[in-house]
Length: 237
Image (cartoon, rainbow, N blue to C red):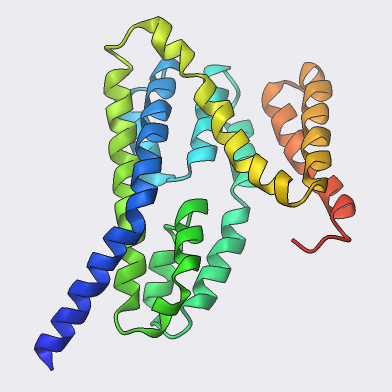
């Protein structure tokens, strides 16, 4: 029985590494770009690595780095990233429901590591939730993804000090590419999301000169979400 348990544990960890490998491959270049851009924004290597260790939210970290580079106040950055990351609460609740058969301590621990990518991959493997030691499978996906993000951020921070300034400036497109990458699949599936996105951009564009770029982002995010309540009310997403 003990040998069987060890085999099950080994299998779950192995399968978790395999399932998480696409996330690792996708995270590394984006994390490196974040590290380079964060250094360009004046964030130290220790600070940007600590941000990845403690935050672990790519879109929010890119936004925070950009806002820091613009000299935006801390409260504006906190509110903007909080609003942007609200979706993680919904994903974490769905993820915990998927793991209703495991102890509460594992649910809380695993939900901390939920991101867009780990949630999507974990959803593909819902059947694993019925197996013994399934928390090791999902935990391995999250841990390998987390490690690759932190390592990539650190590597990008190191490279940001040695690669030519012209190259680091060109990597600024990574910020826009990441948000477009998150937006396009949703727009292709639900056309009305494009309306919400355009409204959020216009609100940000119109209000930023009046209230500052940081608060403009916050206002665009919140008011864009309000528009979405009415625009998307007839679509089930």
